[in-house]
Image 1 (cartoon, rainbow, N blue to C red):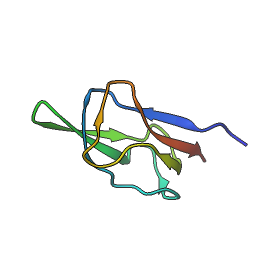
Image 2 (spheres, one colour):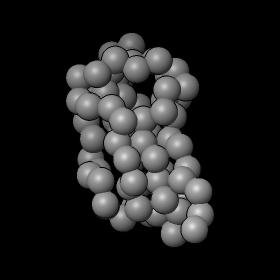
Image 3 (cartoon, rainbow, N blue to C red):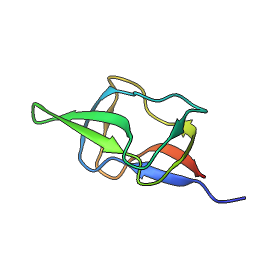
Image 4 (cartoon, one colour):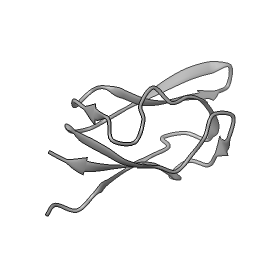
Length: 75
């Protein structure tokens, strides 16, 4: 079984939306979190195809750069 892949915040900001749910299949390039920072939205995309294993943030939550937001199970 492959190890999970962590998706981290590329910038500090507020989680604006979570367009995925636990158990959802995603393709590489699919947005999994939308961060809001400096009056701009930053879509954070899955780097590879897989299944959302765990969501560690919620809408409205402040996150620091580098914070783990989602874990994906590759495949």
